[in-house]
Amino acid sequence: QVQLVESGGGLVQAGGSLRLSCAASGRTKSTYAMGWFRQAPGKEREFVAAISWSGGSQRSADSVKGRFTCSRDNAKNTVYLQMNNLKPEDTAVYYCAYRGRVDLFAVPSDMRTWYNYWGQGTQVTVSS
Image 1 (tube, helix red, strand yellow):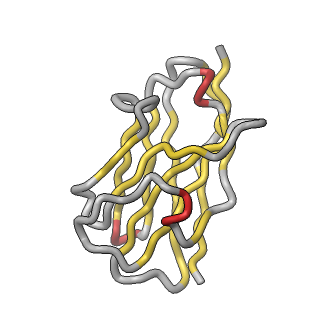
Image 2 (spheres, one colour; image 1 turned 60 degrees about the vertical axis):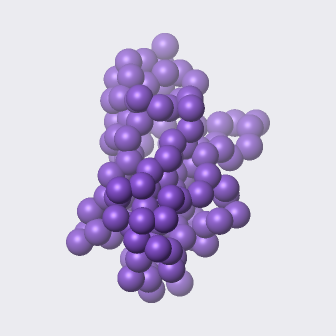
């Protein structure tokens, strides 16, 4: 089993920034990819961004390109989502997701079903 714990959510004004963290623990594999998804009220969970084990391969949704950036510290088993220039439409519960046994440089998927484990989520609210 792998446990994921997100933190860093909160209330911020439009144009502001937040950094989310996701700490992985338990039986993590030697290499794993991580993703971020979000779910707004009444909507389906959607892909936000993802990062490979090496950090060299990333992908992000068009809606956050240029504003959100993934990074990771493998020594700490922690992944970050830096969110800048936040907009009210970014308001959602943000979830991190884990996929084990991946190639170091494999481009992580934007599909929910590709990931094995999920965190409990952290609320991000952006006021206008």
